[in-house]
Image (tube, rainbow, N blue to C red; front, side):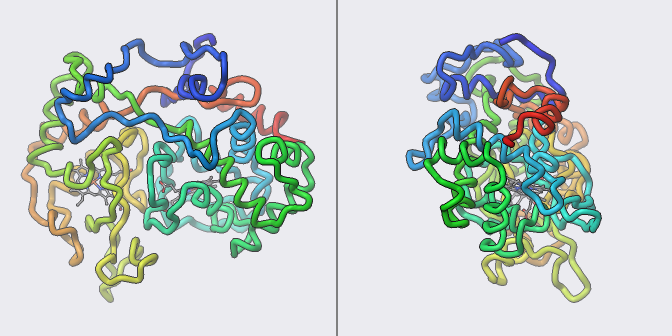
Length: 392
Ligand code: HEC
Ligand code: HEC
């Protein structure tokens, strides 16, 4: 595989796939650095054992990866025909070359409903490392991977229907008109789209997405290499940042483990308080109905966070410095704030910059998406895929 320029974020994922799926495909291309992987024994002597390396993405024994499932998942992800307007693909917001999100500050127009624009309530999440999650969406409203990936078809962003039943019917109707998809569903899952129940088609599409999203992992960052003993992998500022993160600044309380998240929900005073005491977005309590969950949002992974501006559920913080200043001030303006917050951290401006260096050092190895003919590297190749290669 020849080296070709990345478009921007240096996503390089093909190596993982080559190793796990594409028998015989060379896996030397695409990687942005030549640093060897930490040896397995290095894990025993990590500088910060609470932040171990990301494990291999888990395969699902009930939905094992295969080339044809990956192909199906890829087409579904990039296919704008699978939306009400016929113009919105997942990739419109989870843009593959900007860390699978859109870097747009809210309010962003939603183009899925033809010319009837309206605004999405929340900030697009990166899809990096969602294969490792148990709760999906900022309020955790979906608790399984495959259904989380079809949920957008029921939502304002891609809306094929206002209920799961309607969305499944519309999706099935569209797919029945495209022979290429009928063949892919048959080859990948033995499913006959013409005779299957719409809910089966819908669920199977979710499973194909789940195979696709296993590519989207952020791991093997410079921090991981330094943590495993490579002294020169990150600079001194990032090293000081790691110590602050794991100490004085208290970030580790919520951002911990290999994915720098406890996978829980916290109120960090990030929602806007309204005059009547409610919030513009009540977060987790929308799902649980619990008073105690008001204003809580899921702790995001910080791997790749250096690239996923803007921040928080509503995109209200433009930069990492804005986020750190928020925590530095105590983050206690919400009456329901997490008990670990509320006390100013007293960070100096140098310390804030060190924390930023640390978060930058968490950015994982480049990944390259598998594409139907070539690996996808550039927007031009996505355009070509959408124009010429999608199933007909
Ligand atoms: C118009 C923009 C837009 C489009 C199109 C879109 N999404 Fe999203 N996506 C979002 C936003 C905004 C969120 C956060 C919503 C929330 O938390 O309530 C999100 C969240 C998600 C999540 C949850 C991630 C996590 O970390 O929990 C998944 C999974 C997802 N989208 C997959 C998809 C897939 C698959 C498609 C195509 C079928 C798609 N999205 C289309 C904007 C979009
Ligand atoms: C009490 C738990 C908690 C602590 C402590 C905490 N965070 Fe967070 N952090 C969260 C939650 C929850 C969010 C998501 C808020 C939202 O979506 O509105 C978040 C969001 C972020 C984001 C934005 C990520 C994104 O993709 O939007 C960054 C960056 C971040 N935190 C860094 C830090 C740093 C640095 C510290 C230490 C100074 C810290 N956090 C301390 C819980 C915490």
